[in-house]
Length: 544
Image 1 (cartoon, helix red, strand yellow):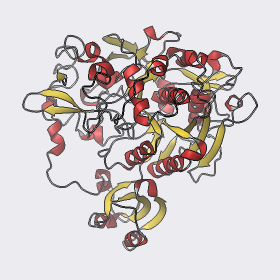
Image 2: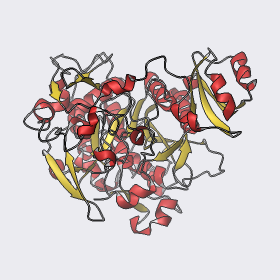
Image 3: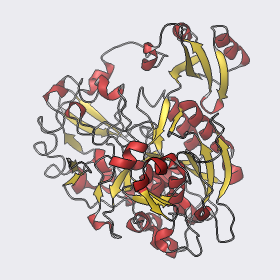
Image 4: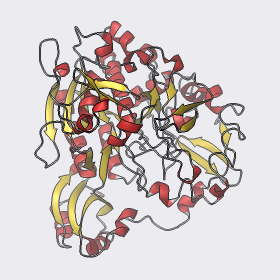
């Protein structure tokens, strides 16, 4: 039986206010004009033939690269010619080659990774692709024999840099597999210290990249999956949501990786403090974290203790539901605040912010960027124990076994003294707090797919309910029932989180103007605005 929750009426129906077939051109292409040339990603309905590519060349397009993973290609097009692409029957969708950004010692113990290692699971032989700013050749990314854990490197940028000039990817890599798996002290190891790393560089020295570079990197991970046993992709990056995940090229790429048998872990974003139009950080999930196939991770604060009992959500951790499709995100949360990991020598983050340097080749950063690799490392541990698990089975186990004991609300203070109140609802903490030991001890097996569900609003009754869509996992079965995945008393109890007067009252979050659906969920300032405040900024102000 579906559990229904009463929320103040923000109009989901606004999404369909403009009837008619969806446009083949992304909405943010409407701002392109004049004689400028625009780099666009063209997705075809089938793998494009030479004739298909020539047709776009005939309209003034210059082919810059093929993207077969998404049946697409990258073209440079004159802006006036873009409208003509919409009439090409072979084309499914056209979007700009958008910019992406990186979304920025107690973490391992807080989620039980140290106990997992005592069981003998350390990610041995599991390949984790780090799609980021590169990985510096750090001494703590070698095994006990002195061999590098980075078994493959490729740069998808044209800047001529072969190392991590930003410093973000090295930090992420250290969280996943840093430390000598045989001799390092427990608090100096990554989550899965025996895993091997695949360095796929898509972010430059400023932490910026493009959709096309990321898609090409995912494509390479899929191509190398069997050769390097790539079972996990970590993406501690993102950008704003401009269209449905069903047409977004980034989302199409991560879904292709999922279908290929790779678990894709993505940071939720760092916009949880965004109070534009009074929404208090709700609806700020970034792409491709909005895709229902991936594991989307929010950030917790360990408060410098080994035990998770006092941990709290980080106020900057982005909250759901995801724009446009209303997908319920994040899927779970993990430590991401004040995480000490490996530093890239000369990396821009460390150079620009020397206060973050901890000495001995270590750097302290905060953000959902740091929480995602904690989960990616946990996935490597699960696959070390049972390599037969599918991406859906891994996601289901992590979500079902996530710890669900949270306070009702907490208040945190940032570096400037500003207070932020957090509520522990399904859009903030998802299914709960990563618990590696519980996940390893779980033996439930599912045969279905574990898509993140969506929220659906009934305008007549004013009721919001969970819609599972095509997912076969989060149903009414004894094993994967909703109350076991999200925790009935925690999330759905009307007297706790979903009490109308406590959380969803008109004056608190959504505001009376949500009856129009403009200023909160569907407003231009959220969907089209620059919602990603990540990377360098969060490294400085993200700590609490």
